[in-house]
Image (tube, rainbow, N blue to C red; front, side, top):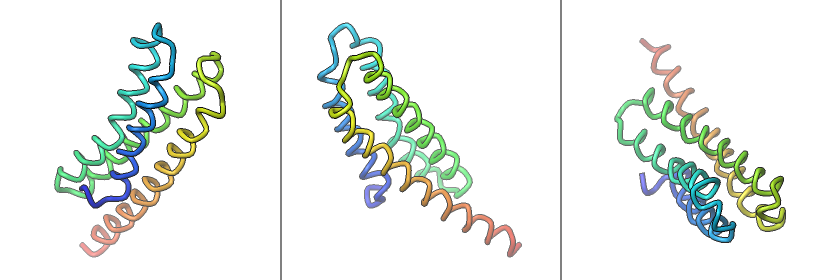
Length: 123
């Protein structure tokens, strides 16, 4: 799974979220900081776990869970801006990476779904 672009960019996202959340106020350490970090870590973790499951159907399910974590991150980053905890310009690189990861995951899911459908159609 280390060769997967989706996993690699997910790992980049974790690093970006840790750096971004480090600048948030200390009183958010057990609130948004914790939520942001947990959601970020689950992105590459679910990609890896799904890859290791051995079936395309399971892999797709875990990729969808990873995509769900991206939506959580998107919401949480927007909350940091709306609550005045982080300026929009600090959040933009993180948002860009979230969007990139989302596009990569969507393409991977589509590809695997097509492969799965093709296998099912040939049975």
